[in-house]
Amino acid sequence: MASPAAKEKMQISEAGSKLRRFLSRKSNGFTLLELLLVITVVAIASAGVSFAFRDATQSKLDTEAQRLIAILESARAQSRASGIPLKWRPTADGFIIEGMSDNPKNPATQKWQESEIVVNVDKPLLLGPEPLIPPQSILMWMSSQPLYSLRIATDGVRPFTVQSPTP
Image (cartoon, rainbow, N blue to C red; front, side):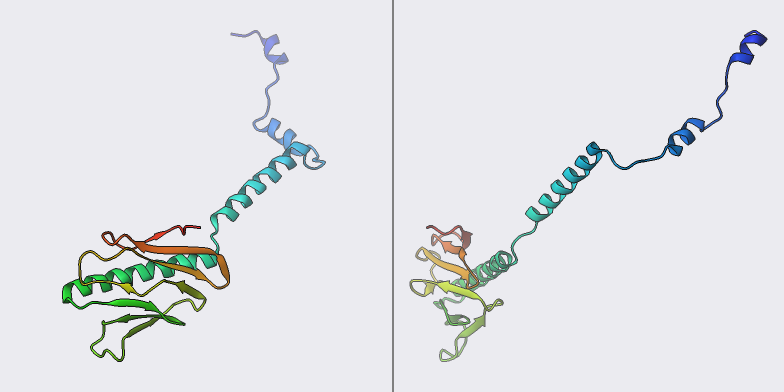
């Protein structure tokens, strides 16, 4: 055991006294290092957010291309099942699938979901009824952003897919 004289000299600190002293110091503002750290974190976060957002026009075009692929593949399957040849061709505001309706004078027409869609094809697409069709493609873009386009194509054996356009 310690001697009584040693006990008198030993100072016992009160619980939390160091924390109170630290908190009672006056703060004169942020240091340069703290400011640079905050600015760096904000810059990285804003860059990440800006890269995460896609252009709305591109998203709309991608959605319309996927919708068209589903319609073409459905028509291709229907043509093979029924034995009736179907042709797809674009119109001013949509497209027509000839041979799909009972009345040949009134073919099945559909409109684009986005009014700005522009389509370019060399000739109407033949969708069947043979299992092998000729290689065919469609070039799609939006009138508000003509530099971004999509090519929907098939080699005649595989289904239609979205491909990057060849320059």
